[in-house]
Image (cartoon, rainbow, N blue to C red; front, top):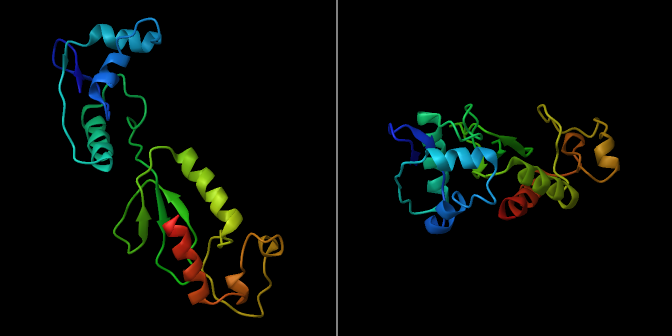
Length: 177
């Protein structure tokens, strides 16, 4: 936590190497105007040591929400870190969410960048053709599969082309990834 002379929290950050991270804020030849202003305003730095990177992410998010520091841009407006959510249902689809709930779903994360999560899920879609359509699935051979089935992007659980057990085996591979 970086404080000004009144003790107001100006910035909350995290680092594996505290020495390198703090030094990076005081390199005036590389700093943006915003970072130069931050460096000029800092009068005190306090630290909180965590046991893991995940704990550091959580502590950082909570402190930013608590203090609303002027120089933290991300997470300030109530955003949360993204998670991958796999709902508890027969043929679950994989979704990105920023709200972890007690709903029986499996949550993977938190992640630091939602763009990277989307890129990973795009890759997953290429090699593991799980369903992406919303809505409840009631498998029936009478249902016609959608276009995603015909281009190899879905296994058509809605049309009964894959069993729950086979689908869950594929989903287990995705979770391992």
